[in-house]
Length: 499
Ligand code: F0G
Image (cartoon, rainbow, N blue to C red; front, side):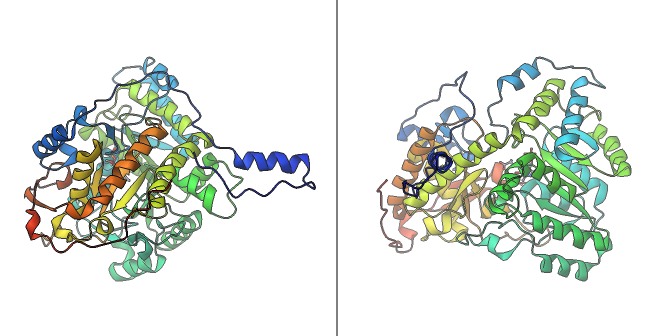
């Protein structure tokens, strides 16, 4: 746990209240739960892991989970549900229509997020699909604070194109700024001036921004974007997938919010948008589920009609009643300050440990994951040798730890030119599932990364040998490049392995 070491010395003048405050600031926090059920993990040898990653085409998505020791591939659908949520699963009302659990979910979304209309979907991309089909016409432009893979693809499949309006600092892994998820208002204004407001069906706002390293957007920026869009009659659709984590950062970092609850902050954040797409598999502590939430009745009517085609009736949207119940309970648990403090504190713990050893990560540490900066970790590889893909594969071999590439492979190709996008960020995401791993797991993870960092010069890059058409990072296959073709290794200072 994080300790505050810079304590004020105890002096004779201190009152009992001063002493109590001092001890409170020194005390570590711990998770606000205890463990009731465990799932055994498989331990493997380096030789077994070499074989497993080769069979998986050097793509961590294609590994079998039984071959993984610590699974940091994603925080999506991998969280531990509470005993309350499991109890809720037993209360599933599996009626084809009008399930009681749907009404619980609707009420939970209304009270936590403030949107009156809710359409359940099987997961986040189901909601993205619906809103993209309803609002985007061919030739439209959808600005957003950095792309997300599935969100952008649905916008493109509906005939739109995505334009990035995030602040420049989001692309700089070393810029230590509190709100690197902010929209650059001048960039947004430029898009509006260039294409005209009538060709912008909505602006997507991610909170926090996954591809930027889990970086938050500030409340002030949300207000400013809202003002600007209102002037032109442009809607804002919030990607609320990790908005609770964003609310914590606002409480922690933005002046004026320290005394607000995370629940209050979340509600205000949502008030600056016209609707939200949601993957309940993250903040909401469920293994499956999502929703589209809206303020406008006529758009809701269209969504209610369309969801029947792709997901299911508008009162289940591809989910079992029990899944909706677990998500409704998860909403109430997700917005508890103690829960979110421990969740983000755990991610911060891993990040600080790596930083202490001089390992290059995205700073500040994000909400749901620590991101290794593969460009600085493997400087001898060019981006076309897939440094982040390489690093993720090698980390698996090193310690059985599964992470995810978030770089040139994830960025895919421009649909018009067919050329690879070359994102500035070339990252490996160590994603922390909620309420799943202990601090000791994170220590082991950090130690494996440190060992890998020491032998980084010996790591050859990869070449892609199979590329699927859509969202290639999920199924692409690779093979190692021959080591002799590598450039001279970069000799960065060795690790300071002091604790
Ligand atoms: N938006 C964001 C910001 C996401 O991170 C995700 C999923 C989605 C939308 C889509 O939701 O998976 O429920 O369909 N992110 C997962 C991840 C896959 O690992 O980051 P989904």
